[in-house]
Length: 384
Image: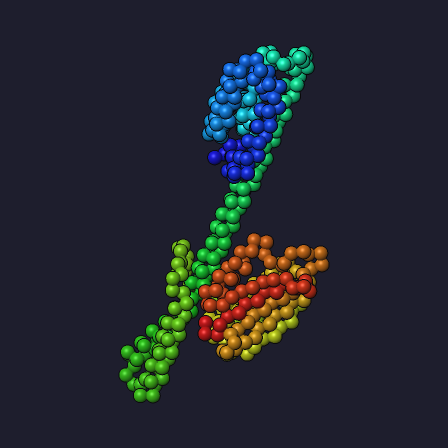
């Protein structure tokens, strides 16, 4: 349904007050004539009442058949006073569509019906010089009110449609960011597994072709194969279920960073002009996959600070251990005059980072403290 044709659903209260207004309009139009009809021509009274009741029933179909219902009701207004209420509501309903090719003919029909009814009104003592402008004013107000309602409905429908479209676009962007992050993780794991499998292959080849190895050397070589095979299985388990799409996904990439590369990352950021204070645990004890995720968190935090809060002091903290997990925190004050968190404008970097953290069983949070500091924090279980 187009926005211009949108009609919101009506509850019982909406129906109730519409019928109250219709009854008030019918009473105002029929009150004087009804008394005369009852006293002088009672058949006319009952006929007028029957036509009015028919109009109150017919007006319920004004939304499904707006123009035909309005035509019938305004045509009945030639001979019935009590149908004025339904005829008015039907004209308002047509006016909400804001189509002049419908409004003008119905307006002329309504004006003609009103003048014809006043011409046979036995209690009418007004001159047509007054009656015509009065009826025209009533029709103009009716049409104007209907067009206002239609314009407001169209605006609300358009805003609702835009909101739904924006939500769909944002959902697609979030899904794309998550997919991209999973693909990046898959590529990283491809390189790690390739490295370990190559070690296994090399040492297994040595056992196959070397005949001069003693028992200790064979046990040492078998231990290397066992350790690397076990580690490869652990890392492979993390990426089961991840889909890798695109012709370049299987291509080897540069060695992926780990916790051991954090000092180099901080030095590089300091050389670019950032003011960084850091507190790091012993990086040698951090497992490779755990350290890789922590590296990405800190890297993203530094990127955000560099983009959205330049020339501010950045604090990098990496704490934890096997018992309580690893927590990486990057915090920086918001620049003066800023009212929003220093996160990427699209937010996709943090979405992808949250996806990466969740895949290893951790969680990512970002917030603005009461001291106007933006804090990016990730907790990762050590068993990852």
